[in-house]
Every structure is written in structure tokens, then in C-alpha cells.
Image (cartoon, rainbow, N blue to C red; front, side, top):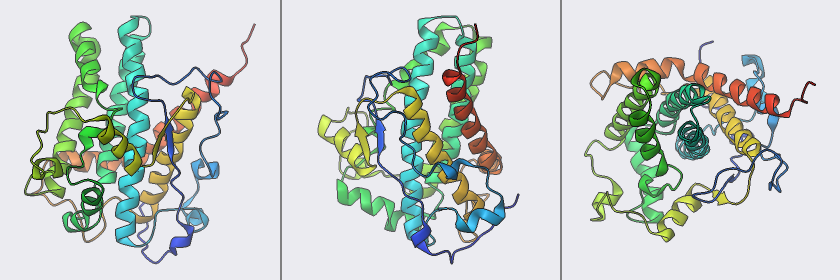
Length: 306
């Protein structure tokens, strides 16, 4: 299915991006049904998750029609989805380190999650460099002059967990994860180089050391900017929230495409071949993960067969 470009959709039909509820830093999601006051009902408008045909897209909630508003929307949806994804990836790698039983499946799922994260990076940073400077970067600078993605509490454990798994497990078992991490690093660097050609982050502009740990206030500021709330939530509730945001991104891409006609990824920009590979698979990867998350919950909620 080819993306159908349309910039005249009324914004009153734009999908809501509710606050994201995740456990506090250092806490894992509770087991399904345990210590979860949300009763796993955290994803609104669940009909968005359906595989709606193109003819139904006009009646489905979607991204704003205005390009500036859509840039902000994608930045928020992409980051919220990434935060939920990081939580799940941390859990997978913790499980792989705790027990060799099922570690192959956990490592494989984490590798696939890294590919999804690469798509989310492209989705969040898909606007033009000028639009990024005028909207998202300006918003972050207004929040704090040194605002940085390094303030994301849920990402910080991930690189260390990856190193422990890669260094502590047979090389042939970790090959897919190593490949996915390398690809993700290239995509991350490419998006950053494209959106900020001069290569200076807000953190660096503010004279801060990029390697310094953020303060609790800065971590809280990052959460507030992306409407992240902290509290008890079970694993099913976390997956439900991730599914919803992946479905929002999928619906957006089916209508507007990844890169608009005025902001293509030029061949002279970083990693064009790898970007094109992920861009061409973006909708399929989103759908695959929506289906996989749904299947995981279905398997956990199915009654035991005696």
C-alpha cells in the first residue's frame, strides 16, 4: 500500500496523545494484574489498533494536518513509544542475564526492538532541519536551555545491559543483537546530523559536559516535556500503551508518509542506504510489533490447559 499524502485533513480529528505511565526509574513493571491500579486499560481509542483499510483512514484519528503541529506530534509520539520500548528491552535483557533458559528468545526480541527503535528515530525526526529548529528544538530550549535526550531515565541502563549480554554470552547467540545495535547507532547519528547540521546540541550550546549525569530535576523535566508519569503499572499495561502509540505512528505514515515531498532524505545526507532500508520497512515493522505485543498479552491472559 502506498502512503496517501494529504495535508488538508482537519486537525480536530487528530489522535490524542495521552500521558505515558511507566514505572519509576529502577523499577520493573509489575506482573500482569499485580499492583496495577490501572487494570491494564491505559490505551484509549483501541480501534486505532485495527488494520484499517485505506478507505477508512479519513474517519480514523491521525496526526495533525499542519506540518509544524505534525513535527511536534511525531516528536512526542516517537519519544513516548521509545520510552515504553526501552522499559521492555531492559526487562528482556535483565531476564537474559538472570537465566540462560529462554535467553535466545529474549536476545532475539531485543534485537527486533532495536530495529523498531531505529524506525521510531526516523519517525520522530522526519521533518526538515529548518522545521525542527523552529518547532521541536525551540520548544526544548524554552523548557531548558540545555535540554537533552541524555536526561531520559529509562534509556540509561540499556547500553550497559547490552554490553553485559554481548560480553557474557556466546558470540553466535548475540550476533543479531550486535547487528541491530550497530544499525541503530548509525540511524541515531544520521538523524542527529541531518536535523542539526552544525552538530551542536542544546546541551553543548549551554556549555554542559555531555557525559555528566543529569540531576533528578533534569530527569523530571524530561518526563514532563514528553508527558511521562511515574507510577505502578503492570507489563500488560505498558505493552498496551506502546501498542497504541505504534498504531498512531502507523496511521500517520499511511496518510502522510515518512518524509514529505519537500523533506526527502537526500543521497548526500548520512547513511542514505540504511535509512532507505528502514524507511521502506517502517509500516511493516510497526504492524509486526503491534501484532507481537497483542499476541504476548493474549498468551499471558489465556487460561491454562490442564
